[in-house]
Length: 183
Ligand SMILES: [Fe+2]
Ligand SMILES: [Fe+2]
Image (tube, rainbow, N blue to C red; front, side, top):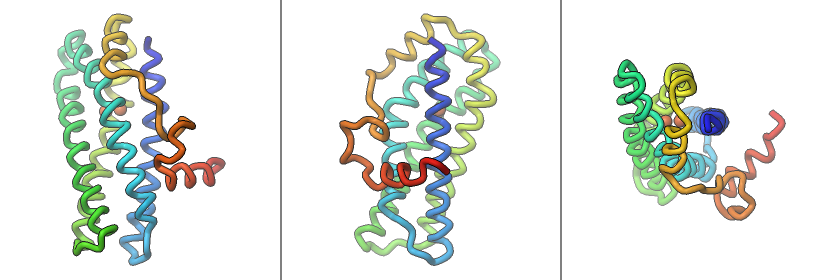
């Protein structure tokens, strides 16, 4: 059942790639160019919906059990669980700023850049901590029963980025990823 770890790692690779892509758009924005706002919104919205609804709740369940197996993991795990909430809040804030730009509502450049920087810093640090510090311990210590509980924390859900049934979702993002698949 440690296959969940493999799935998480694969998802982290995708998440990191999306954060890098978002970063290139923010860099364009910073330089006064017009970034692809639809693509930026797709990225944050995808991570908000898929990440927060399916990826994070299973981690919450698995990491909670890890603390029971190794009390030394309490501090790093508590931070990760808190970061799941902070990332969700930062995503909402960022989506709001991007929505203001789309609606031509007055929003300052620095507000957008600040929301983006907070989001990127938190998310990247979060992924790195999980990969380096927590997932290896989970692989060593969690039992089949622990993994089954983590799996059961959310229902099975297709990934809207890869599932054909979602062809109308995240059109801009899917198109971009398809065009840049070989990079
Ligand atoms: Fe996480
Ligand atoms: Fe994760």
